[in-house]
Length: 397
Ligand code: FAD
Ligand code: DHB
Image (cartoon, rainbow, N blue to C red; front, side, top):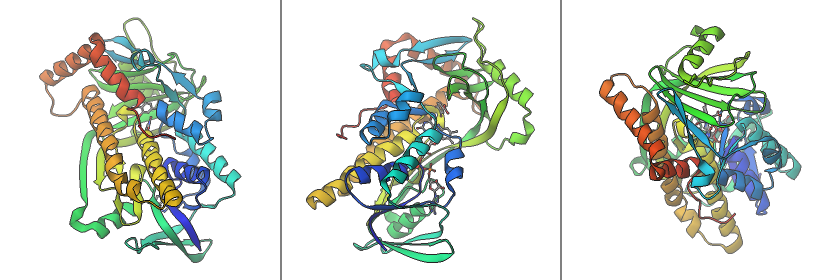
């Protein structure tokens, strides 16, 4: 079997790349180790940057996002018991965020893939990459009980943080590969609740008891998080205890609080910053979480995956249309510029809004001063807003 681009992983990065290549008339085969329901049901991201939404539109997969997703032109930052509005659109020349679950994004992309008739194989196993330093790299895998080999022009490693592509890049590059890593001494306990939103914008809260985040998925479902120790066992948290903690952290002096309802899903996520540099080795190119991870506080992970795909898809298109390789050669460098800015923003949001072990009252006052400065200075607020809605991607779709 031969294809132009072999894509490993059918998360947002792999599916979006497959769609972009289709739009550009380039063949691909997507290989996914899990089944379709597993990929859809994972409860993860909820915030799309303006440029991610624009990209989905340009790829012909934005219809449902605009029908069912929620466009938010503001966000709140809450501390000292008060919510402060950050008018995102007003400060960024009309840009906004879209609250639309990752589950819905992958569903839309899977349906688009199905409509193209191009291959997407679920439940493949024993995936490995070979000959990435030649112009015929190969992917070996097992599917439906038989061994397969896919000969490609290029391989796109979109297999997330625990995939096989980054280790393959590391062993191909040896000392030429660099990995930057930071773990945080906290995690997020997240719930989906059957309760209508009580706010029309997200609320990022810094409370003496720690961080909390108010988000939503629809007019009926809220999505809430609070900071816990990284190794917290979700079985230690009854639904009643979760609501008590949510309300303790989020309720403001004017009486605003989340609506309480049955908890539909609960889990704990660890927080980490990670960057692999470079993002390619020979003809293996990484995109999305396979190459980098951000702590979720800035809502950047899926958006960075989309920005990588835009650059990588454009580079493949240039290769097939004009037989040129300069965009492929620049891919890692260009992508990493944006990745590092998102890393900085996500780290800053995390360290400003969380309580960390070992900190003292000085740190608490410093964090409050940081937040008070942001809501009191148009310049500081604009800086937060332009990062939160997403820095510009100066690439035409
Ligand atoms: P993944 O979604 O991890 O997809 C990789 C795929 O590859 C998976 O389907 C996996 O099964 C498959 N795979 C793995 N190994 C193999 C293999 N060997 N062979 C074949 N397939 C393989 N981001 C935002 O932008 N905004 C947010 O609001 C936001 N909130 C978040 C909240 C939480 C609680 C969490 C956990 C994350 C959040 N993120 C957010 C981050 C976002 O979910 C990820 O960045 C995003 O899923 C990355 O997409 P990806 O396609 O690169 O990787
Ligand atoms: C959501 C997740 C985030 O990480 C974030 O910063 C904002 C919202 C969410 O799941 O809705």
